[in-house]
Length: 119
Image 1 (cartoon, one colour):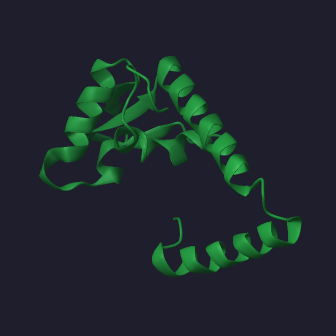
Image 2 (cartoon, helix red, strand yellow; image 1 turned 120 degrees about the vertical axis):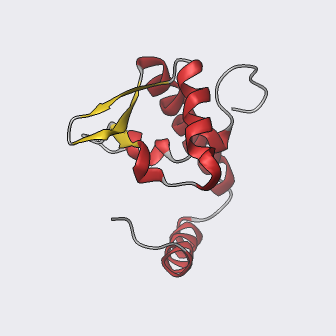
C-alpha cells in the first residue's frame, strides 16, 4: 500500500483485517478492540469518515455499537491482503522449499511465545 494517497494507514485497519479475512466474521463490536484514551474510537471515526466502515447499534447491548466493513472497506482489506501475500512470496522466493518449511516452523514457535492464542 506504499505510495497511495488514499486509504487507511496500516495501524488504522490492522485490527479489522483478521476479522475481515475470516468467513462469517464481518462484524467487530467497538468494545472488543479496547484501546486507551479513545484511540480506537478516533480510528473508527476516521475509517467511517473515509467510507471504509459503518457503525450500527448492537442489538445484544443497546449501549454498544457494531462496526461493519463497507464494500469499499472490504476492497481495501482484500487489496492489502493481496499486497501482503505478494510481498511474502517475494521475501521467500530465494529460499529452498526446505528452508521455507524451517522458517515457518521457527516463526510459528516464536509467535506462540510472543502472542497469546486467538480466542
